[in-house]
Image 1 (tube, rainbow, N blue to C red):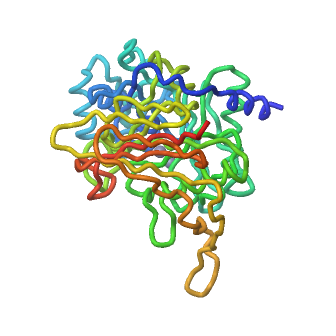
Image 2 (image 1 turned 120 degrees about the vertical axis):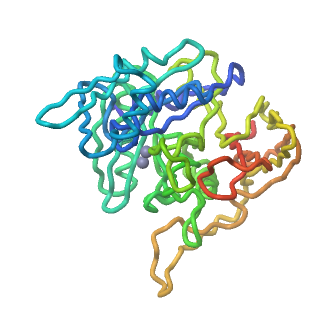
Length: 414
Ligand SMILES: [Zn+2]
Ligand SMILES: [Zn+2]
């Protein structure tokens, strides 16, 4: 009953208002509350001073609440990390003690951090948790954004069942509390855990990470495994055309753990974010806007506007001097070849990875150069999404050679 109720809440979304302010945010970040390597205020400070408007600290299986003394003997949080923390926030703010011969620092809670950083219309901290579990050797991580109470991870009988149970846990809490919150599926290719065929089966789930800044997550796949954009096209096509399920939106996040050394091999802040269009910088507004697809994901490209009138998808890039832009409009048309091919190992054994699909799926419908790309739908598209690729190299990229990119969410002809 609860699950049905939650689904009802999720499916009653309306069409994006296409009005409001663009707010820049990161929904996936770690601190010393779990396996990040800096104090939560230092992390909040990084994001706020780097122009972000909202931030969710999504530590593994824990909320930043309650009295927690952090043991410095394990090195993390000690040495230069503590020196920098003391320098930034001072002796009066940083709370230390020695118990049983061990030096400890009290980790500040989200309510305390909010008092320090939240600023109406400028910066907002949102409560979050990365619900972290596994099915066998496959890591299953589900973020819960703007949740109200801690959610212990749930075990399932399969990859799909494990994802679904944790998605349901978030939707059940939403239904029970009436607080807008959403689950999103983290880094599906981390540990090669989740295939497109598994991801596409979820109910009550509209968001997954198409780009995650952690160097271990395989955003681009490899010779055997589909990359996240290919996975996106497969799940959009099959969910919308065959399974009659809801659209899924792709988000970009940092999944930052490392704040002291900026390098391509570290999971640093500043790699991927979302720009959400909402009237107000409030969690409720941001949650609703993202569920309506009124946002884009970015690693650097800024858009002034995204507009869809049911027939034409129009994008206005905020151009930078000396930078060129190329936009790929990507989609699948009705009547596509639905053939699939299982991926096998050298001895013909099934590898259990995302299947291969025809080139009809996620076809580049057209490419447009310049800062004002638009695409007029023919009407037979199952969906159309856009990817704006700039010529500007991404600073401290997830992978060497990346250029700044924006992903516009899929639309459907009306
Ligand atoms: Zn994770
Ligand atoms: Zn994470």
